[in-house]
Length: 274
Image: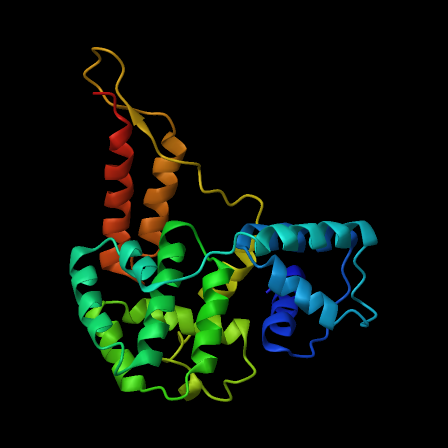
């Protein structure tokens, strides 16, 4: 895991979980990259809270002009931070069988509130991983939800994962949680479910946040011009990117990987001129 990734995670741990972290020295350019990723990931407020908490550390040298930008972005993000709901989880499931299974889980929410809340977060994390790449905001929410559970039944959670066919994805998410916040997990049994035996995939996902070469390829749109019988795409790169991402995460969540790609394709066809 590279230095900018490590420092970003330290800021988030300090800001969200009140840890005393030791940051490593970085150049102003790298701190600027941390800021850019925080904006992209929707975690400016959390990271800035961490900066405030660790501000007396010698190696936390962020130029004053950058701090002014941080403060401005925090105000903007605070005014538009969305609230996660059960409806959000239901709507991001693209597989019909998974949506049906989720309805059954929601009916038991009063019996298993902690497990249901964690499933909601796990679904949102998986949705972003498959569709857009790792998104830190829902992952932080998932970590906080698990911490706040007064009681947690691992068997119930495992049953929910099985009903949604997302066991493998849950192992990946546990690996991400372990890298994000290793402090409370003295052993893997304290995680919602066991992590992957090899966490290299999770580490690469964190490092990829700072990869300028990574791109989503933009939106995929189809058009049909005049009497032309052929359908054209305005962004072939987007089509290849989405297909590549679905293939990349197929082994973690096969049912959603396939239907997410098909859903994206079908939604784009709505742009065709009648």
